[in-house]
Structure formats: structure tokens, C-alpha cells
Length: 354
Image (cartoon, rainbow, N blue to C red; front, top):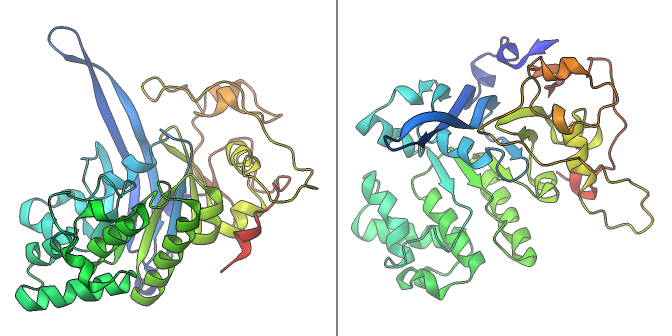
């Protein structure tokens, strides 16, 4: 069995990851008492490791509160990580300060979940897109105006919309503006923080297709944070499943949907609606509620809710590492030997799309 930390040992320059995350943690202190002393910590992200290759989409999925958004923000240092390594294009992002960090952020952008709250209501959308060009000294004056018009056209909006304000647009249009703003500084990596979850279903497909087209044309790499597995099946190259601040399974999209090994992943996939009235697939119901990240269980964080038939007291004592159980398929479960193949959960119809 191979640990994720050694999975890239044979990488050469041509296959080196664009972004490499190792043991990333973010703990928020809990303060109490008159003196507001630290009495504990919320372990929002607790030892996350993964790589993203140039032009790749890695989807990060899991229940609300599992640490997906905090992971994305910590990578960009919108929240300061507690510990861990963030290497982007060979540069240690955590070592950067001031001007050097600002220059690096040109290449690492984010599309926020809420298209209503992510735009300044007092700025025209043209000014919002132009701001990055000015800050990074990429264009000014007429050149900046032309660049804004080009970006609006690229995301499917008219150039004359640049003089309008955010309240004049629908949610889907605002999210397109957010995408244009992220693209303005020519990034190579974008954190997509649930970019379609706040949109109507009819608009979600348009935005997902736009993101895929932009990735193809620009060679972008995405960290695609989502909870909708049907969208993930259409968008991702690989999928990382998070539970209580940790990654519990990491595999290619095809392998994960066809043969999930982690019991938590199997339960997630069983909850996805299948448009087939004759389907006999059974829903896996997990007992209880997710534990508090301020007081996570010992051993495997999933063991209090795990339906695995071989679960025993070792699951409560041993913290399972994220290990390679099959080629490129990493699982954090001591009850999953490398030779074990689980009973497949019904594959989503879109899981085989390219």
C-alpha cells in the first residue's frame, strides 16, 4: 500500500503538479471566559493532502460543514492555515508575504458561491472586472476597457453591460461576471466554491458548460467545491471526498462512481436521485449526525456512523492514513485491503461523459 505523500515520487518536470497540498490544517480557536482564553479548537481542516495537475479539475465533495470551503480559502490564504504545505508552481505559498503574495495571487483566483454577495453593489460590473487589471498593472485606460469588453463577451454577456450595476442582473449573469473577474488577471488555477449551488437548475448547466469551455480554451486547473454529485460527475477529472475535515477517499471520477470503497462515499452516492423508476438501488442510511469538528471522535472520524460489517474497536483507536488501495484510488479505511472490491453503487448517467 502506498501513502499519498509518496505517490508523486516518480514525477518528472513534465508531470509535476501545478498545486501540491500536504497536511494542510486550519483550526479555529474556541475562546471562553472573561479573559477569552483559548479552551479548544474547531478542526475545520485536519491534515488534507492532494495534488492538482495543470488543466485538471479536482472536485472536493462532502456534507455541509466538512471543511470544503475552508480548504479552498486556506489554499489562497484568504484564511491563514494553521499548518501544512502549499506549493504552487514550485513556490511555497505560505512563505510569501506582502508584495510577493499579491503577485502570486494573480495566478490563483476564486469564484465565490454567492453571486449576490460577491460583487460590490456600488461598483459597475465593468469597474469590478477592471479592478484586477489595475491592481496588477496589466492594463489601463482604453486598453482596460477593451479587455473588459472581451471578458464579458467570453462569458456570454454583452459588452455594454459594463456600465450596469449588479442589482440589474440575474443570479446566473452575476456568476458570469464573477467568472470574468477571476479570468481578468490570466490565472492558471481557480477555486470554484460551489459556483452553481445558488443558481436555478436550468442555469447551472450553462455555467458548468462555460467553465468547461474556459478550461479547454485557457488550460485552467480547477478545485471544484460542490455537494451536488451529478454536477461533479459532469465536471471533474478526479474526486476527493471529505468528512469532518479530512479526505477519506480520492480517485478518478470514473473509479469513484463505479466502485466507491469508503462506506461514507457509498452512502453519499446512494443518496443521489436516479431518473429511473425501475431502479432497485437501496439508499444507505447513516445513523446519527456528523460529530462536532470541535470534538472529533478518536480513530477514524467516520467510525461512529460507519455501517461497515467489519467495524470493530480498532476503528475507534487507529487513525487510518489515506492509502492507495488500487491504482490511483486512495482510501482512509483500515478495513479496506488493497484486494477488496466493493459492491458498486449505481453509476450516475453522466459519470461517463467526457
